[in-house]
Length: 449
Picture 1 (cartoon, helix red, strand yellow):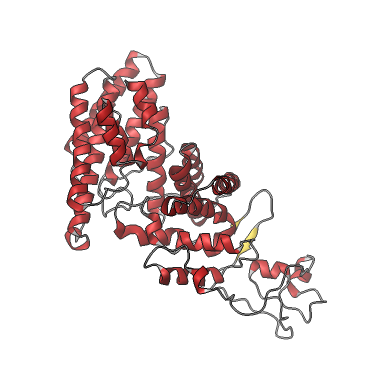
Picture 2: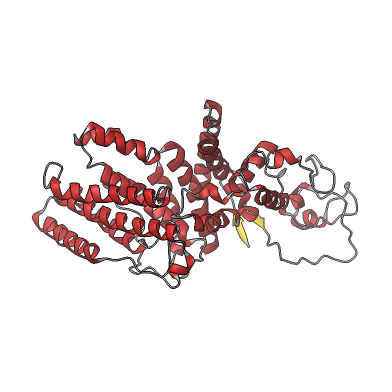
């Protein structure tokens, strides 16, 4: 049983779908439930609509039925509307999600037809989540992580999902307008307020908090680009007391990885310490976001910590300790090789293996390049930095040529390598090859020129 509430409303307890509730045999249920029982999806026991129900009498609450009562039975959806926003080949999936949405009181949470279709667009298509995962094999698993908590946590997740869905729909269909952008920002603002006021008292509520944070982070990562660190920090800090990577369920663990990686990206730029360090030195499986290079994530945390220390410490003893720490990170990463989990060859096609190996290589090279730049500022030891930068770009281009697809989820190593590129032609080519990841590079290049 989970409880979710914000400061604006009393706690709402959502009972499990499988819980059985017994009622006194002498009462009968009315045809239409009162508003409170309807809200809780509980059986409303009263003789008629004019008499208070059993639950309201017992709790001393007002028994009201003021909502519009819709006709019994499932709402009929025209075929054209049900699949209008789906991608080719996804109609069956959309129908399944619409079935799931019928189990949720859309009237209760003020979800209109447009919002319902937007949720269907977001949840009916596993391809929607391609920006979150390292290869298409994990699209459905990532989709499941978002879809599974929705029936029980809709009031908490609704605004974040709708904002994220609106942004991703604009990316897919190229239909962004000023009105849609403003609507997405308004929904995201509401979701941020929900995140800040969300109580987290157990591992299940921590999982909801991480899901909410991931949806918000995905929206900001896709559409805004500012405020990402705050969202990741808020989500991870609230959930941290209940996080133990060894016992997290398979759908929650990748959400932690996603948030930690996004926060690490922004923390390095702003010379801050990330919230959470994942303690993992060996990959037991292929991670949805980081593939085979999840064990490198703790080293990125270490580099952020060193970067932060260099910004605040000037004492010679501290600098000596920092340099020793940096030596250890560089030595460990220099000898690191991605491990291959059981049945790696059987589980992944040759094209996916090409991308996974390229993914691991560029993240390792980017770690070495970051370590190098913490020792030497720009215009010092640039030759070695150029070698690693060019090798990262060459690896990504080779994977694209071999598979005719871009390697996914490599924004961090791409940006680390791209900063080193000098010359108008080289920078123009870089932006043309990976337009989405190149946002903001012009400003960075201006500072390093």
